[in-house]
Image (cartoon, rainbow, N blue to C red; front, side, top):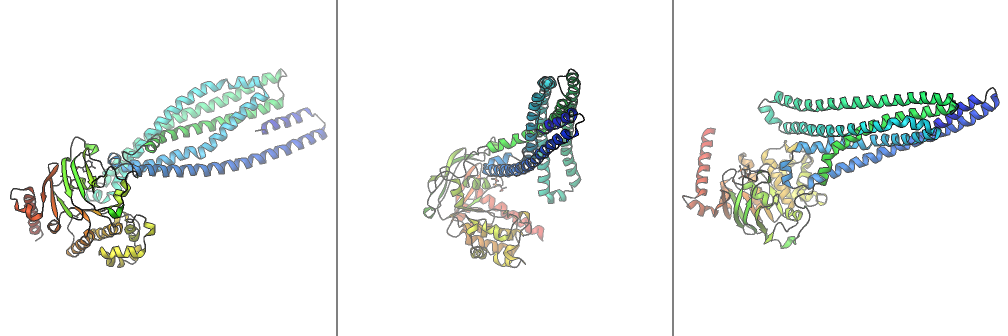
Amino acid sequence: MSAPFLLGKVIDTIYTSGTDTEIMTASLTSLCIMLTGVFLCGGAANAARVYLMQTSGQKIVRNLRASVFSSILRQEVAFFDRTRTGELINRLSADTAVVGRSITDNLSDGLRAVAQAVAGVSMMFYVSPSLASFVLLIVPPMAGIAIVYGRYLRSISKNTQDTLAQATQLAEERISNMRTVRAFGKELSEVNKYIQKTDQVFSLAKKEAVIRAGFFGVTGLSGNIMILSVLYKGGLLMASQHMSVGELSSFLMYTFWVGISIAGLSSFYSELMKGFGAGTRLWELLDRKPEFPLNEGLVLPSDQLKGQLEFHDVSFAYPTRKEAPIFQNLSLLVPAGTIMAVVGPSGSGKSTLVSLLLRLYDPDAGFITIDGHDIRDLNPYWLRSQIGTVSQEPVLFSCSIKDNIAYGAEDPDTVTTEDIYRAARVANAYNFIQGFPKGFDTVVGEKGVLLSGGQKQRIAIARALLKNPKILLLDEATSALDAENELLVQEALERLMDGRTVVVIAHRLSTIQSANAVAVLDQQHVAECGQHAELLGNRQGLFRKLMEKQAFLQEEQKQALR
Ligand SMILES: Nc1ncnc2c1ncn2[C@@H]1O[C@H](COP(=O)(O)OP(=O)(O)OP(=O)(O)O)[C@@H](O)[C@H]1O
């Protein structure tokens, strides 16, 4: 900061020392030594600034990403029904990147520009207060222009990030459902839809470019006006002996300095406003409180849990479709240690029943109990740790089979390989896993696409076995497995169900026959409940009709295969 001042002194020394070369050389040497020291300190400070700002900025981004991800995972399931995956992915990657950029390199350069501008202006006042006051008349109109520009840029940035999120959503959905896109031959039309979205992003970027160009043009022009006014007014002051040539040179250098800082500041300001625009949704996400807590409430001694489940006059509609109730005054008792098969027409709410038991949603009226405790009073973490699930289409993560099975355990890090092998054996999965060249270390592809339906189910059964839950919620696969797989899965399921309270969405006759009771869902409540033989005996009953229809369909399928 003192460099222009010292350079001014150098010029004045040269100018005033006349022909006395000895004095001039001595003064010049000492001033140049001082200047070298100043430059060295400046260089070191600059390097330290860049390093510190980079590392602390990246740390902020890392923490921001972790907080956003943790905030997303804390939200209730209904939040994910309303919010698209692609949008959340975009918030996590693109928005945090924009905010990150605005607070890392940009903040570092911005702070330097602020420091330089403040110091430069102070030095301008120090060298010549009257010239400084004259030159800085340009600041108030510039500040007004900057405020309007900042607001506009902020709103454009928010729109850009929102449109980008829609484009990401479209791409994410199509890529993850590539087989359907291919089967319908929709590649070209999907590309066109994506291009439409990116075109919207492009037109917003063009708007941003126009206002940015205007703003940078104005700041450049004002810098040149400042220099021109220094030359004009400073020239006059020099002519009237109120300023030396060295002072005018210093002042001019400070003016350049301040001009460059203002250019830096406008770029800093632009990036900061973009960061604020992109950050708006991030702050909303970070501030959002989930509708129900994840880890608060009553924890019962797990060894005393019997596992009796009961629905008491439960009414429920999905938060996104409040106008279409799924259950009205539904009551159902599943005694501890028994198997309840749930059947009913498609859309009657069988999966919804399971979701309510897992407390993914809360009933609108009525309540659900486990051993007489309202599940809303129980700690949701604890509740879910007592429940095992195997769904129709089990989801496996893209990691090793070993890690996928260990995922069932409360603390996967403490699970031994022997525990995993044991669970795999009981689930009839050990032999086929060991048949792979890498055995249990085989990495299954995204969503486990390398495995057949039956294999995935057996891994999911091993995962549930490792959890060793008191309560089991099963959704039997509707898609037919080959005879051998069917037998192996059935056997594994029977072992898994042994000694637990089971609610099974049943699709196989054998499961329905072996269940202790069958609940038939229809018209938003339990239409019939009883043992298989008893329900079948009621000729007018819904269960009988369902079974007849199923038998009819099976017969039709067999004929079609012949
Ligand atoms: N997350 C959701 N948001 C809004 N509505 C939903 C949601 N999930 C399911 N539904 C609706 O709730 C109703 C019951 O669905 P559910 O999946 O529980 O039926 P189901 O008996 O299991 O059907 P299926 O036998 O065809 O699997 C359906 O009309 C469905 O469209």
